[in-house]
Length: 152
Image 1: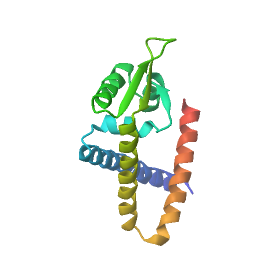
Image 2: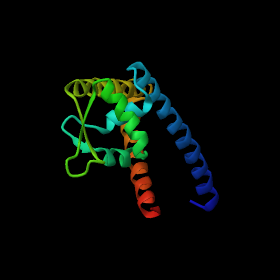
Image 3: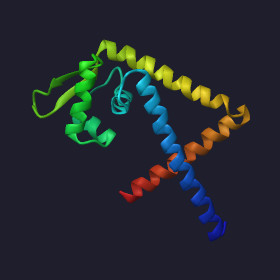
Image 4: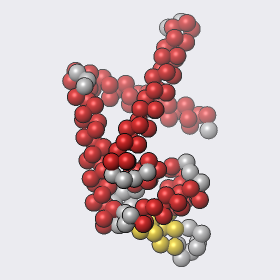
């Protein structure tokens, strides 16, 4: 590929990834609203797993949020009964956060709904394109992660 072709492909990719990100945010927002969650609460629940007991610092890092913003999100999830938090005995500034029993059931339901959305989306794509799509997205994600690691 010459420089002009690479520039053209890069422009197409930039446009597609911008639109894809916006559409993914819209997809998450709709699903969150359907289950009476904020988008931030939805994302936080997606970061928590049934068997996981993690602390607020780890979640804030994963979600790229400030500690105070995460605290407000966790407060909402605790009020809804989906999350349990405990003060860490060794560091009182830190909280241990985990899903409650109700939260575990809710996250399973959310995961199923999230999967169903993607199955619905795949139904609009020819079956022969499914694996090439997954392969291309996997390669793109790997290249993107390498670029991020190199740029950090």
